[in-house]
Length: 250
Ligand code: NDP
Ligand code: 8X3
Image (cartoon, rainbow, N blue to C red):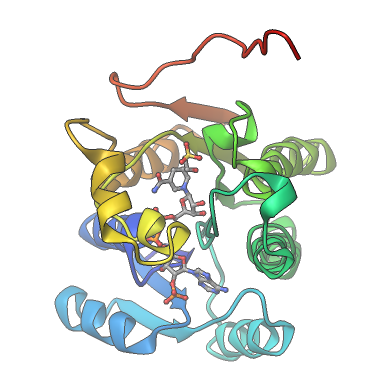
């Protein structure tokens, strides 16, 4: 039985990815801070789902979680680095620096350190797949994207650099870069629980669904071993690029 480790499994994409991989016969370790949510998911998914208390932004928690995985002699075939968050939509000059620190600690440091802990065993086994969850925000700038977008640009370049370091091994790395997605807690967290603003964001838009991202993860994992999917950028049909901004009479 193959083992997947999904970070951020208590909600949104992570939860949908766990459901999909369990349905496909994987053993899934689901990590997140909210154990109650993970236990609930465990009741639904059964004995092949292993809930794991994990705060990727806290080194002690991360060390403990990796220690538990190693102690159980579970070797990870697929790592899905999904845990992440955006905090705020203010312009850079108005942002709360604590929000920036939390995004960096979670989306950059946490993702990098989890990868660093899991990678040596994959290289030793000469097998494994790392799927990072980036974002279109790592490619397309927008007002209020500042540190969140930059953290996802890190994920994009980190994924490519891992491929460079893993040359000569069979370990694979992919970056999924989704656009606007509804049905997760992402915007509730970003907009600090302002449900009116959340509803306005998704009003009359057919956005990506968490199941679409779970299907994409599953598709990547089913590719033959001689193929590496470097990156996949996904937007809802309702989303597209806008023209560059020009300010007149500046
Ligand atoms: P959700 O808020 O629904 O889920 C985020 C998950 O990350 C939760 O399970 C949360 O669990 C976990 N998480 C957050 N911080 C930590 C932490 N410090 N340690 C461990 N787990 C953590 O958001 P989404 O499912 O939408 O987002 C998942 C990923 O997809 C993120 O990386 C996000 O940036 C990215 N993304 C989202 C898009 C969207 O529009 N929704 C579009 C593009 C990318 P808990 O709080 O229990 O720890
Ligand atoms: C989330 C997508 O467009 O809200 O990563 O930044 S977006």
